[in-house]
Length: 194
Image 1 (cartoon, rainbow, N blue to C red):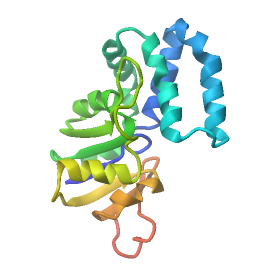
Image 2 (cartoon, helix red, strand yellow):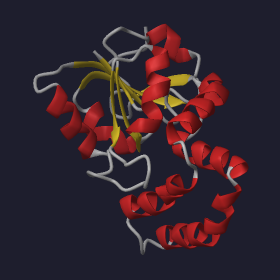
Image 3 (tube, rainbow, N blue to C red):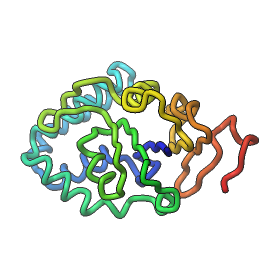
């Protein structure tokens, strides 16, 4: 099987940030929370707030948008065109996507792509509250092993070196930069892209 990160890997951009901006432009009530969002961002940049706490506070906006499922559907109707073209040449029926973005946000796009297995951060779509760890770094390996205890990763694709724990499980790993696939750092001499 092939395993993929989602944001900046299959999708141009970060789905969570784009969804926030999409909702901000359409839900005026969200502007009332902007000072709190700015303070949250500042605390994260200053390393006073941990990443998961930052994301949970940012996702608090979900409580202000009403029908989240309908909003997610409308978001993907507008943003599905941001899927990178290189993915169609690699797509396989057994593809797996593992993302730090909320699973409820990533899953609809992955279903449109035909991806059967999607794992992401488990977040309550009504409140933005996490019900487990942020699906990032080593947590992605834990989640993968939970579903596929003996799973073998043929190829792994990500834009971020923070995904090194998953890359280490793969037969081949690729660092995605725009539409370009580069051998994962440290694996350059082991293979070349077919």
